[in-house]
Length: 184
Image 1 (cartoon, rainbow, N blue to C red):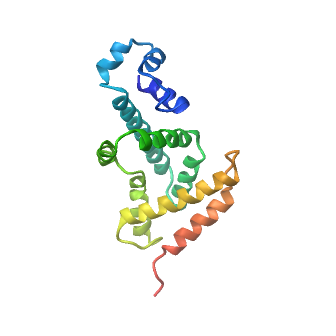
Image 2 (cartoon, one colour; image 1 turned 90 degrees about the horizontal axis):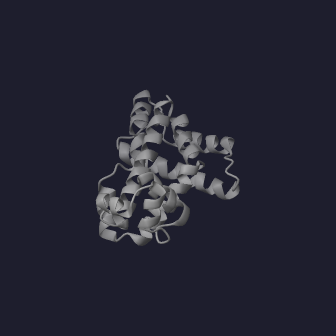
Image 3 (cartoon, rainbow, N blue to C red; image 1 turned 120 degrees about the horizontal axis):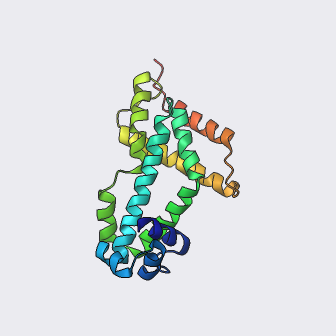
């Protein structure tokens, strides 16, 4: 059900998808769909939750494959140039427009934030003396935001989804150097 809903919400958007279309896509009756979900909003929220959990799993898996902070941050770039990022952008945009603010606030309170996946890599980088800092979450937010932001600007420069790895590597190296402990 959630996979069918995800596919339709990404392809058509929240307002243009009906519960009947989702039931048909999932190969179930509309009554069965309503047995599991009170309404389209509840189904949409669960679809969003699943998509975010999958994105977090991608980050966790990709990040654990790297030992250095530079390569870990490059994974954020890889994510931004992947198809699943485009899907998340569509879902998130519709979520902001069509789900009431109280429900949105409650939803975000129940999830890990995307930059939390960087915490282990940052802890190791601090222990190794690569970077300085004592507020891991703040560092994670700033680095995630900076790398995500520059990746988005590259999407405008490279609409065919080709990342300029040399430019991204230079930017990440510059970020890491700016966080290096002061030399005494």
